[in-house]
Image (cartoon, rainbow, N blue to C red; front, side, top):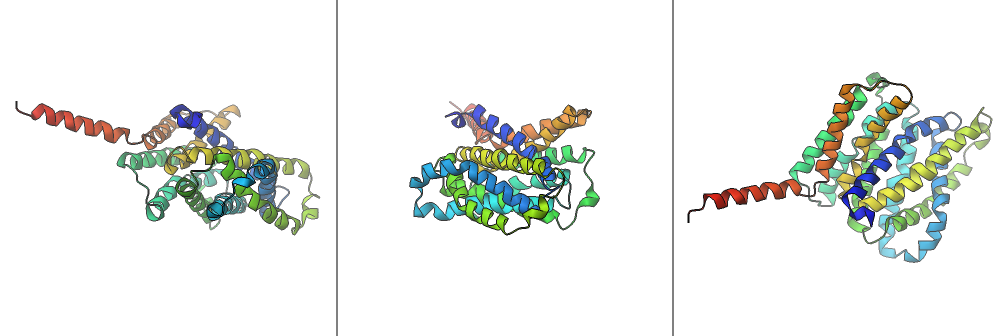
Length: 311
């Protein structure tokens, strides 16, 4: 399988960054007609319906021992963050949301160490720090970042990153025996009735009176199908083959694509942007080193000892 190979892991990570890097603008479009809870519910319903054929196909693989972890993957990994992000974006801009989203690897590490007893190398911690510095640098040098926009709504994004960190560790620790398709489809099967039931209790009639509501609805549906269903399929498949911290480092790469969209739109890319991009890629590479640096250091130490022996 391609995810067992290093190139496949990096390709998946970059694809996820591209997809999720486009999610903020889709949320912003959807919020023009729909309230934040409605937008989140539409996103989850769209994703669940897209995954429903797979859910029905794999329902036979549903076992009682996996139920708790699948509920965590569904509600903590997707449902709750969807509502938190749309709520946050009613009061903070996309750049600020992107910067706060970069906290995900840190929380993944902290939660993994505290509750899942994961092992991490010193070099991977260094990779985390480099990636965070690169992501923060890219966003800080952008034109849209307004630090005065930090308010209590920013904590919704922070809470979402904690949810992501919990989800990644839970999948790695307790659902690795299932495929990414099984994890995603079965977890979203539980979300459909909850999200749809909630959506039907909201004032949809008012939302559809807004000009362009159909376009705004389409943006949320695309966000659900591609930015949630497809993205979670890729992410849950990736987590089974790599450390959770590496999978979560996708949030470092998202600002790279934000800069890329700006270039397409006619913005100028500066040398400092390239520097921060290189810092991010170096950090991600080190995170996924899988002990490579430790092995090299150990080999050098043995070689030094052997050279000092007297024969």
